[in-house]
Image (tube, each protein chain N blue to C red):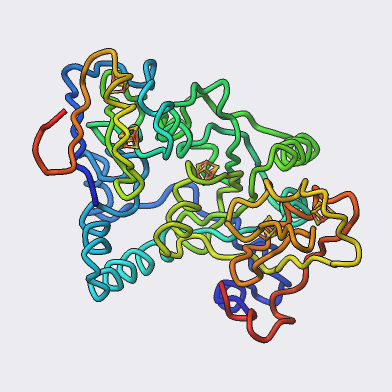
Length: 84
Length: 278
Ligand code: SF4
Ligand code: SF4
Ligand code: SF4
Ligand code: SF4
Ligand code: SF4
């Protein structure tokens, strides 16, 4: 079963310095991306980094990422809804 | 012979020993579509270097093998033209350092993405060739800067990374131009996890296959943690390590850890059933 995992980017402001969810996930499901894509001649500002689920197939549903997030930014459910 | 050697070897023993594959134009006029790509959020940047989308995982989950196969082939044929890799041994990596220039140490994008590693802990990736001179063009690809290395320094770094247990592989950036000498592990390396978990061959097996000599193996098990490809396990009833040669990527990491010299690397081409297992 694949979970629905959503991250509220408004709440998760600087994931590159927090990264608590990335490190706690037992199966490395989550990753960082950016909301701007590659940019020529300029480094991407940390505020443009976002957390997204990558390895949905490896998520056990343990909820460790949800619990560890200081901003309450992650929602995860196995029923397609926003249950928490 | 592997497809790459056949196409791009030009008489050299391996395609990655052919110096021509390290030569490239510094700048070229890009196609319009490629240029446009830089402008918007792309799936790779917006999701942990993922080469597949959720639809692929969903198709797999519902057992739609035709769709899985279609997407797999689509990704492979695109990646083989642009960005794909092959596992090499430490010896081969050291030899490559002597035939190309410049070589530099850069931060690893895969681990930045999956671990959020700060730059100072993340210098495990090597970039090679003319492309290194235009790092300013894509500062984010080279976050943390570019450290140019002498061949001796590069060899030292490679030996250290090998000791740490990282797999060496060589990558194209616009095939057959080789510009990446990567040092990777499962599961944070996008290439390793994509080939191991999803069976999408963007990283090819190397030219060797590891083999254990049961006479020499004393059962110490110190090789077992070295394998990043799920090829190496341990058989308690025999008290020996075990290598699934059909799964082995020929990286040689297990062999460099065995002080009994019980593990040797055999030429893939010498084994009829494995000669074409890439
Ligand atoms: S629920 Fe558990 S396994 Fe799933 S992403 Fe969160 S930490 Fe990882
Ligand atoms: S733990 Fe929460 S705030 Fe921290 S990086 Fe993850 S989603 Fe963002
Ligand atoms: S292929 Fe390996 S070294 Fe290169 S960026 Fe990915 S994990 Fe890092
Ligand atoms: S390190 Fe060598 S001796 Fe020890 S288990 Fe592995 S193959 Fe056997
Ligand atoms: S068995 Fe040894 S050579 Fe083969 S992939 Fe594993 S570590 Fe590498």
